[in-house]
Image 1 (cartoon, rainbow, N blue to C red):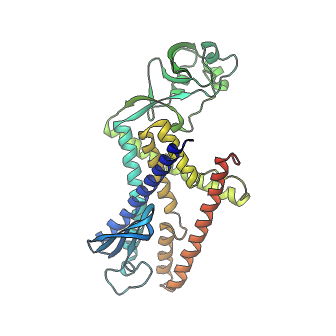
Image 2: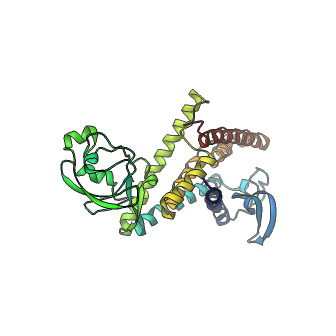
Length: 367
């Protein structure tokens, strides 16, 4: 990877991460303001502080040296100031829970808007790269080789939400179709292929290639885009949220169980370096629209992770103030802060652990 690409990848990662965290914190800020809770500071980036931008709307706005998001500091969020009506700790339980969950809601809303926008206005039309070709297969007989890209079936392109090109091929099992193929040298030609019968296709595939549909952002993208009615796009947005939300929850479960079974085994997830690499690969290989799609996935991921009932995440803070309410506020401020500190140390250690595998993958030391 050349230096220019590395620098652009790092910049993209910082911009994406910063934007997602700022949107999250904006949710806390706007909700706190709506309930008249005093917001002491809205920080862009993380300390140490670089510059005070000014004071507006009774909030200090600051610019900080670490460009990885931001933070909101509320009056009384540490448990003090219960006598101040504008303190976070003085609010009713449901108000505090609403302020805490607002960041997660903003990340979900951002992802939904991106999913809907792509589906409504500019869904990329995608083909598929052929990793390998089976011996004595329809693909081989037609002249398709590994490294070729199948772009269309009978002149039809398939967009991200309109069904994959592989599904289009499977639907025509037993038929003779015309595949638009781009070869490794850049030349494009139409090839007639008689696909395997449905019975044969069930075992070995209709065309006889090893491509899969598991990672849509690794497809081959044409310079074409599809659109659809807003109503359909809204439905797609809801389905995408549900689909990716469930996949992320399942992935977190696999990550936790895998760590318990064998902490030395490579995790089924990427850390900061892996995520940055994926963002760069998608940007350079699939374009800015698919990069936005990945931003939406990361926004869903951030929402799911933050709602987990683990301190100091938002879900953990919601659990803590609920327990305090049930226990009659018998948990001291010091005990609460110690819980958050232990949780933070654990999260920091986890990030170091998963980043180690990121580095190993970069140098070929882990799958």
